[in-house]
Length: 93
Image 1: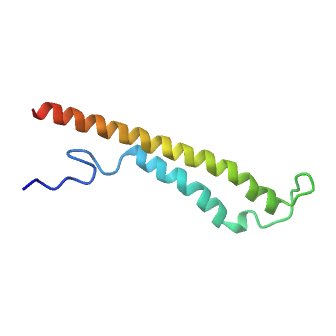
Image 2: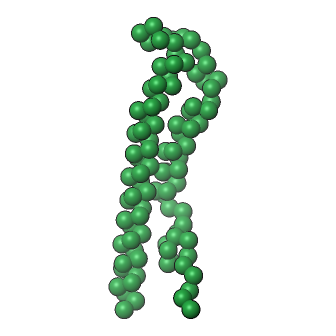
Image 3: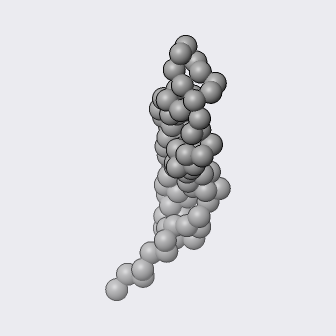
């Protein structure tokens, strides 16, 4: 019977700095949008558009940047995990 695999893979931590940073990158836009009191005001206007609206619209591309950063961090972590598994499998032979 095979041994159960550890959460992060054999000998790999489940939580890595890359994954923590990715989680924070995804959390920033969520917190910014849920904290309505920080942008619930009409001033300053930008091109006649009240702050409430342009602030939310500004977060659309900013959220995309944070999401791409999170993707790249997780992708980097996954590549490191695959390489570590390959090294371990190659050393076990």
